[in-house]
Amino acid sequence: MDKLVIEGGAALRGQIPISGSKNAALPILLASILVDGQVRLSNVPDLKDIATTLNLLALLGCQAEYTGGEVALHACDLKPEAPYDLVRTMRASVLCLGPLLARLGQARVALPGGCAIGARPVDMHLKGLAQMGAVFELESGDIIGNCDRLHGAHIQLDFPTVGGTEHLIMAATLAEGVTVLENAAREPEIQDLANFLNACGARISGHGTSVVRIEGVESLQGASYRVMPDRIEAGTYLVAAAITKGDLELVDCPVGALDAVIFKLTEMGMHIEGDQTSLRAYVDGPLHGVDVSTRPYPGFPTDMQAQIMALMSCSPGAGVITEGIFENRFMHVQELCRLGAHITLSGQSAMVRGVDTLKGATVMASDLRASACLVLAGLAAEGRTDVRRIYHLDRGYEHLEVKLGRVGAKIRREKE
Ligand code: UD1
Image (cartoon, rainbow, N blue to C red; front, side):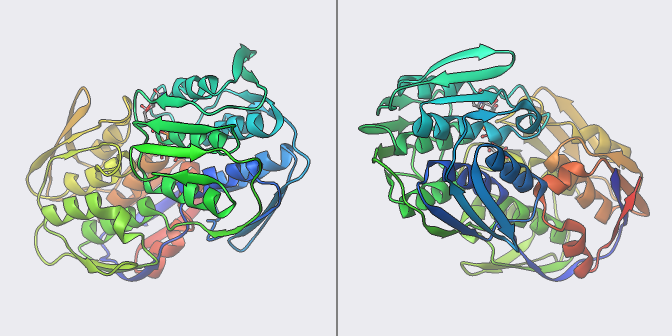
């Protein structure tokens, strides 16, 4: 297993190119199951989760080829079974269920695993698909679904679930009649998925709002599509500039999707300026603690909660961070405390009192964004920090240590 070794204290300066979005690419890859023809995707990041998805697609009978950020896909010989060994490592793989039902009328998909950040059921996905005519049973941990052609439905989500919204949009594209999703999630990655499906001939409108309308079509055709840049990767590097008191320029950056993060970092005292596709972020004075609550988009993203906590833990003043999406997403707190942070937990809130300096130590990554938080804290800490169990990082950050090294971080990968 690999670990990252960081010598903290270097201010980061220079340019970082932002990679394609993992959370947009995953549903778009799985949506290709719906398409009758060749799909060509560009700006697909080179990540473990992408490799896992391509393996899954191959097992499902899709021809899939990845070269230098481009994927060519053709769902020409579909099979209905997604085995546990692949699905357990990545929760998003459950999104193949709806497309398989829409194309084949049957599917067998293992119940998913993924990051250990809460119970994360898929009940809303299944309830919505059932309203569209699918029938489910559970056998040996697998969801078995059957249907005739799916039909349009009026679906009210109990919570604006990101994966659930994506899943139901996908299934509805080939259903008979119109589907209306109310209380839908509005994340930019959902808009990217809908734009991709529309490029293939789907009729989706209202994506990016909380009411999405999908008029089913008989079939979808191949298309070429560029995946949006990754707003969480970009947000993580904004925090890297802040925590090292550096000066970074982010290029090919999804600026419009970062409003909530930019707003909070600016409130802390950071300077952020730019245009539609690039941002310059720098610090020229002390930052200070603020209160942050994670919320569905356009609120502050839960996927940036751990990173802003790292920043607040070494910024003067205090602030309360409240996690409003997942019930178990504070596992980075005890590791930050090993670096000298002063954080007290109470239910879904964390009181962070900024300390003057964090001190290097060996810490253990528990999930993807927690790993990023520990790397950020290590960049600011005095002395050496070893971040162990970084396989989570390889699931979600393309060439993290290379990108950070190029702007001056003292960071290297070592075998444990
Ligand atoms: C997606 C993102 C993840 C991000 C999250 C919230 C991908 C691949 N992952 O995850 O990085 O942290 O959105 O922005 O895009 N829930 C249910 N029942 C359901 C579905 C969800 O109770 O059927 C609950 C979950 O347990 C969780 C909350 O709803 O507490 C939000 O989950 P959801 O929005 O579905 O997140 P994901 O799609 O899993």
